[in-house]
Length: 398
Image (cartoon, rainbow, N blue to C red; front, side, top):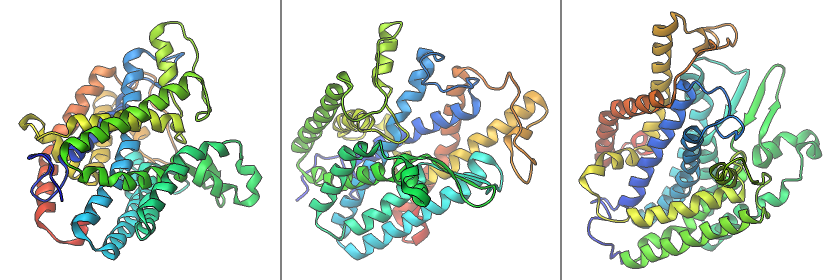
């Protein structure tokens, strides 16, 4: 029986802390993508030889988005199954949603978000691709005992770095499959076409499976639930610190002393995201569980707007990229009188370089992020209300 503290769940059984954390994730993701389009830094913000503290932290804090969101997707699947009880229907919904996310990644997000072009010569896939395939796999795992999902999740998260030494070339003509599953990177398919797997699937499938296996924690009495979240959060965080201190198994990139204590700390927390290393996953999931424990309280009025974004994350995602890119186009046109570099085929025949003075400092990046969030809030609030009342399939899938 659910004996959660009053106010920690909504009237329809949603866990407030999960939606609230997802809302913060959406805002951080918008910050990261606004930085992509508006920052004047034309280098990797995590490059310790080029970056500065504010830029490093602006990029690094967004590392928490994908692991926590995918983990919470697994948790939400368990909770939804607990409320609904229809295993076959939940499995079908996961399959449909997963297939939809993969399709959206390959089309809408690529064409109308990142590139403003109908471009098929180079296809690179990101977080929606990983979430989609993870949902497809989870749609099968939920038909088995929960212990199976737990085992799959733990083995994938803990063990995938054992295979870092396996190169795609060793797979021969199937090397592309190893890149999609584990190694990442790009490969050619057909004449003049290239596929870039930014989010290799194996670790992310494991993260979602682990979230599903972790789901029963959220059914416990409030005090027990918070103790469990704190205990697991501390365990994962301490495991990260211990493994990282010794540069032990779990990350191909080691840390080292830098020119200052602050940058030495940056070196320590700069773990491999592409593909996600064990260190990276421990560093993000551990503090994430601690944060859920802190958020597992009645929702304060001043955070309700954040909770709205967490209730409609895919709707937010589909809108925020075209909006950010569109604002970048308008800004560049006002600044330069031309925006060819913001488009691809058929609007621009080839990729054009940006002006040397393109972009702005972090203050503008943060202000533009706030503007994007402000513009999207009324739409997200409307759709959150629609999701609470509508039984239409397309509404449920979004």
